[in-house]
Image (cartoon, rainbow, N blue to C red; front, side):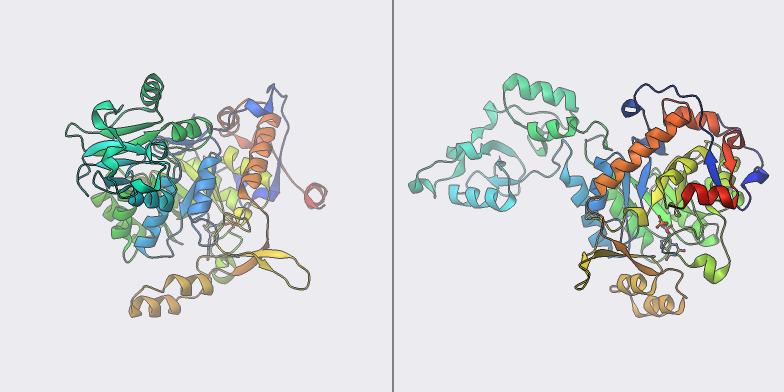
Length: 489
Ligand code: XMP
C-alpha cells in the first residue's frame, strides 16, 4: 500500500480538531465483529491499537497489565532504578500466561507443616516437590488435596503424600498450549510440570491458566500466553544496562524515548543497543518531521514515535517554539516511510475521534497519556478534596520539576545537578478520577469501530488502506464556525 510522496499542503499547520471525516456508504454488518488489528512493531500486532505512555503517572505494572488484557500494550516508565523497573516487567509477566516459569518448589524432605505454610504464604493450591532443596530435579507434585487432615501428621515429610514422578503427567520444555491442553485432559489432571531430559524443572502449566488465557482471545500475549509489555530505556546513563536487564526479564519491546529523537544522542543510543541486543524490537522517538522519521528508520528503529510537543503535560512548544502540529507530524512521517516502519502517534489525543484520524493519516498505533491517567490502574493515589469531595489524580509531564526530582533518587550528584540545570518542559496537573481504565479502553474501542464503519469498511486495516494514499479525499477542513458546531458542547 506504500505510496509515500511529499507531504500534502493541506496538512501543513493542521492537527486533530482541524478536520472531520466525510462519512462513506457503510458495509459493516455488526460493529462488534469489526477488527481493529494493527501493527505495533516487528511481528507484533495489537487487537486494540492503543499504547499507554511511558510516564510515571500513567504506566506501571497495573496499567501495563490492563492494557494487555484489553488488547493494547503498556510501556513501563523508566523514572526508577533498573531493579525496580525489571521487577515491574516480571510482575506483568507473572500475572497470567499459561507457563509458570519459576514454579514454587519444596524438597521431598520438607514437613507437612512447612508445605501448609508455604502454600498459604504464596496463595497457591499445589507445589512441585524437588529431590533436594535447590536441586530443581522433579520428585513429585503435592496438591492441597494431598495434605493430611490429622494434626498428628504435621512433622511428616511431604514425600509420603505427594504424587511421585513416575505417576505424573509431564511435558517437554517448549510444549504449546494446544498440546498441553490435550495432555491435561487425557490424564484428567490440572497441573503439567515441564521438565528437561534430566528431570530438571523448566516450568509448569496449569489448567486454570490455560482456561484464563483462552477466555481472553483479544488480549495481547507473547508466545507463552503472558501479557505483552514494553519498557522505556532512555539514551543516557545506565540505558544500556537497563536495556539488557529489561530484555532478560522478558520485555517484548524497548523504547528509546528522548525529547529530541532526531539527534546524535539517539543515533549513538540505537547503535549501542543494537550492538548488545541485536534483535530486540526497538521503538524510538520522538520526532516530528519527515527527516526525523527517516533518520530513525535508517538507524534501525523498528517503530518510529512521532510527537514534538502535543502532549497535555508538555510545555515544549510554549517554552522553545519547537514543535509540529500533530496531524501534520504523523502525515509527514507516513509520507516519508509509508508502511515500511510502523508509526506511533504520541500525544495530543483529547477525544476518541483523534485516535481514528491519527490511524487513517499514517499511524499504526496511538500512544495515550492524559486520556488514560486519573484511572485506578495509573500509578499514584486518589486525592479527595475535603470540601467538594471531588476525587482527582496527578498527571505530569516527565520533565516536570516534580517528575525529574523524584526520578533522581538513585542518581549520582553530577546527574542530579545536570538535571536540575535543564529547564523543565513539562508540567503537573490534576485529572478528575475516572475509575477503571478498562472502561475507557472499551469506550475507545467502540468509538473506533464506529469510525471504521463510517469510513465504509469492515476493518481498521481496510479503512487505513483506503484512506492513507490520499486522506484529502476523505477529510473536510473545518472553518471556525464548523469547529464550534462540531466540538463545543
Ligand atoms: P498526552 O497528550 O496523551 O501525551 O497526555 C502524552 C505524551 O506526552 C509526552 N510527554 C512530554 N512532552 N515534556 C514534553 O515535551 C514532558 O515533560 C512530557 N512528558 C510526557 C510524551 O511523549 C507522552 O507520551
